Each structure stands twice: as structure tokens, then as C-alpha cells.
Length: 206
Image (cartoon, rainbow, N blue to C red; front, side, top):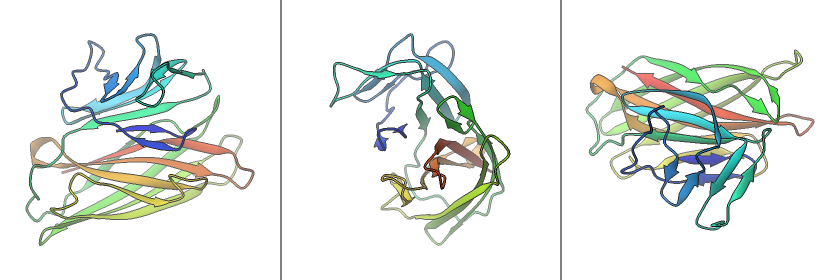
């Protein structure tokens, strides 16, 4: 998964990709980050890798000549394992990790919760994120409820204005460690003054 808040794009696959010595995946299908692109907010475990990229260059199928990424712009990537079949019924407990919310060179803070239930062939994930902008402004809350069945296990569920000009998020369901689950949720929040913050939330559920 590759997400560019500035271009409002979401896509890419890391199938067959191998992390480098630092644990970073730079190639997602036809999207490739240059070797000198700075990596921030690298996090993961045996089942997923999330990273932010800034201050470098990325090439895509529609921009083979490359897109410059400034030191105040960010692209986000997430690689994770998909389920081959619908998992059995489960009600795991979820714990979250988050990239730092960014708006250019300005950074906010974030916290969030998630729940996941798999019942009779349907997985329902409910996520809430509370992001506090820099400067002590009040927190802004966004949330999403996403459902997955056998026909949509590989889908990314989008809500709100995530792929347009508003606030929103997207969620994908992955296979975690020890029979668990991973929820991967890139998000963006547009404040009343049109300031845009973005990042990725990951919840591991066991």
C-alpha cells in the first residue's frame, strides 16, 4: 500500500518485495522510492512494515521521470500479509501504533482505539483516531467501521473524504503474528483552516 496525501492517491502492492538491511521496502509494484529518500516513522513486526518517505524522489507508472518529494512532504507505505481465506470467528484485543501526524514541517500528536470481531464469515473493524494539531488546538476525531468478507479480504475500505478534499481514512485487514490480525489505516484530517494532517495507524489484534 502506498499513500500520498498531497496527490490524494492510494495504491501499490509489495508482493514479492524484500526489505533492505534497515527493514525498509522501497518498491511497491511500479512505485519506487529512490535510495536517498529519507525514511521516517519506520515501524513493524513479523507481519507488517510501515514507513514514511520524505526529502527524495519517487517514480510511478504515470510519472516514470520521477516526482520530487520535498522535506515538508510525506508519502506513506505499508506492507502486510493478506489472508488466503476468511479466518475463523474471533474477538481479539487490539493495540495501536501510529506515525507522527504531519502537516508540512509541523507535527501533531495522535492516539486511537480499535475493535475487531469476526463472526460467521464477516470481519467488522471499528477504529477511532483523535489527532491533536500543533499549537494546543483541540483534538479532531475521525472514525471508520469497515467490514470484510471472503469476497473482500483484499479490499481497502475507504470512508469520508479520504480520496478527495476532505477528512477520512481507509482500512485494510491483514494476517498478524500467532494467528492474529493487523488493521492498516492511512488517514488524513483537514482542519477548519484547511490545514491537512496525515499519517498511518496500525492496530495489531490478538
